[in-house]
Image 1 (cartoon, rainbow, N blue to C red):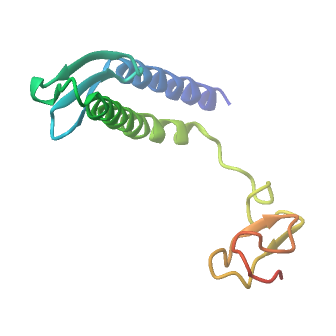
Image 2: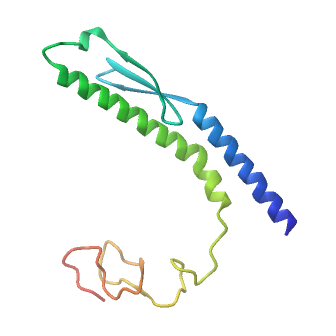
Length: 140
């Protein structure tokens, strides 16, 4: 039991270290082929914006606004991807396996298999006798 507790504490420490590294990491988002660039920390804090003077047109502010939003979106997606890569494996390793028969696991009581719907064939639904996942498909 103490070995399991020590392992859990070690995994928690690794997760905290990964979160700290993520928060201090930096990603670069861009739009317009690099005309607008945004620097964002892994914590989500925007730390810099660079706008090429070629894209600044007083008669077309909407394009500049769209490019800024696009660069922010790109940076946000990169932060999300980086977080999934760095934290996903650690968080998954911390989850204990579910026992057979637990909700969502094979062998759980009250489960029925959708045999008709080609989209969800083999999927298990808790307490459902019909497949609600595909329009127009008859229930089991």
